[in-house]
Length: 192
Image 1 (cartoon, rainbow, N blue to C red):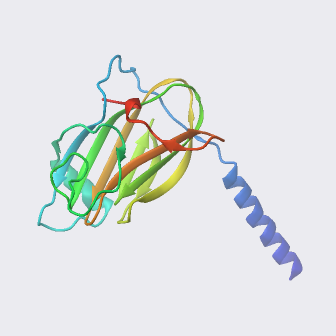
Image 2: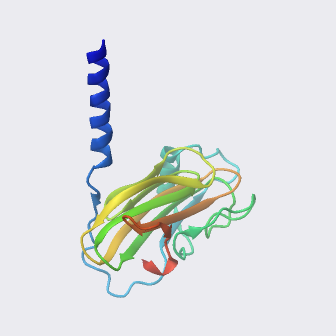
């Protein structure tokens, strides 16, 4: 009995240690690099109005096939709103899905930690790697923190599918070099 417990405990420690030392996700820079991108991020919206409520990311992605271009985002700094306030740059406050695209600039290579915040669902990619995922509804909170390797300074593609159901909305991102404190990503590092 003691051997089984010790063996199971050793396996659990090995599994945890392996997860703790997993290699960071290697980002792929944009190719070609944008020469002089405009500030902000492109966005397409679909509002669901008084029709069915958007309940999950799968439903939001289906609706995005009918999305129309909206006013560009200034970046990813959309703090938690009050109930009834518009979602991002869209006019509706509820049941909104958004498809966001553009670039983020890293000024130095290295290992970074990226963290998305959302209310409600999100599927976020930077440099071809998934860095944020929440399929259902939630309050404005951190999703997960992901370690990424930035092989060289420059622009990296950003693609995000996002939806907001009811109540308040937010969409934000934090970053920091590994070992440093993570801070809100400034809007001036996003381009389209």
